[in-house]
Picture 1: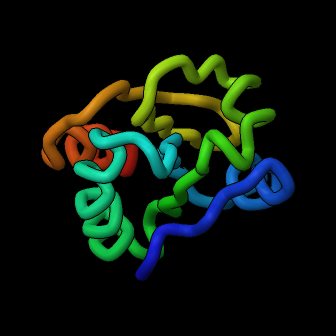
Picture 2: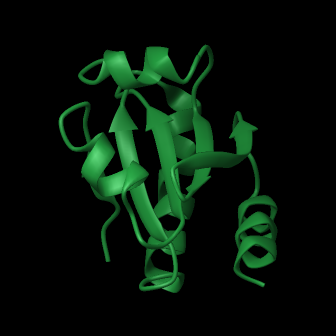
Length: 107
């Protein structure tokens, strides 16, 4: 299961109106730490398929959404549930940091 490509155009329908929580990775092609965390994001998309929606938003091509959430550093990972940001992680983190947050949300 590949992460969804999230854009300014589909953010509302894919993220804000999602029936399940969404983990969204704000990234850019030129960002080294973003490339480093990408395999982790893909693993989470596989492991949480059906329980958590996982998406990636390129801040260069969807700058409006990134600006509206005050994204200043990347990678920034937001966890959104029922249209509300319930958690945020900035920078390169280990997989267990993200899975703990997701597991707590799903309890």
